[in-house]
Image (cartoon, rainbow, N blue to C red; front, side, top):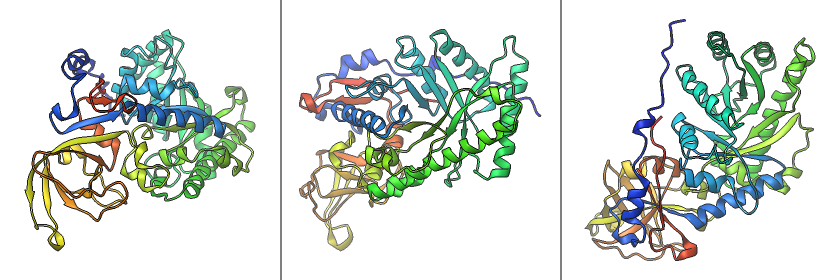
Length: 435
């Protein structure tokens, strides 16, 4: 194999200064902000987190919070601690997020005890992951990885053989439930062969099986989302059953003396994880359930389309300014307008709800976008969105399609709190940027 050069997380280029931002913006009304501005309602965000703790408890699962949507210290605390429950396990999509958790003091204070790097392990990141592992170990914490290919196992073994103090990596086996994003197919012959090799590895300790039902975003009812959730459980449970068969035939039975963790979830399936959904699980479980999800604190139009949430549960929006107006230019002689938020501020993700975003309270949507501007088009009035008026200079709020990508576009978030009026900035959250 060609030597793989190791890379480091560029922590010294991390983030803007929160204290300076707080000093400049806290207390200001929203119309004093430069647009486009990403606004998060802390009270709604926190309530969404509380409800997810309730879901996990009712469904009989532990909880792992994915940090990929907000990528902040403050949001992580709200995801993990509420008056309904407490968790200490997280998933991250980048090592910058993982180091942000550490440098934000969340490991030292015991808030986070378990970090899963949520991609199949990158071979050029092992030095960095090892440093993270060492830092977590200082506080009694754990780093976990995802595996879905034997070359990953082979490289980990070669890497650890070169270390003064070799370690075993705690790993989830990533399962492919049909999304074809990552993971191993549950085909018995090839899967059992994979597990035999993994169980024999000196560098791997199998923690459990992990899957993500991304296709559940197409759900349009709780019943449909529950069926996807049941499918996630079935996939990981079947994988655990096959793994147990491999162990039963192996001389390495002692390598697993704790139940496997069956980690499942997406925002739609996690929203449907209730006591009622639990009653629909008929199989005997070959492990313990873990629920993971990430978009749920913020939510967006893609989640609204599932019917599992309502508009009041969406905690994020983008504040924009109307910068021009075009009477009669649209289809059927409808008016159009231009705002100062385009693809960079809103992303180009689309969904089942037409357009790139809805204007809050007004019968307009973000219908077309370019890099730094968007075209607002009129739509038929509907409940809660009946005001057709719009003029140059107005600041309006837009809820976009996909909160994860919208948040990624903004260098900091302006925090409001609807329990405190919601009309002025009460905090600034600075997300962990980079990889």
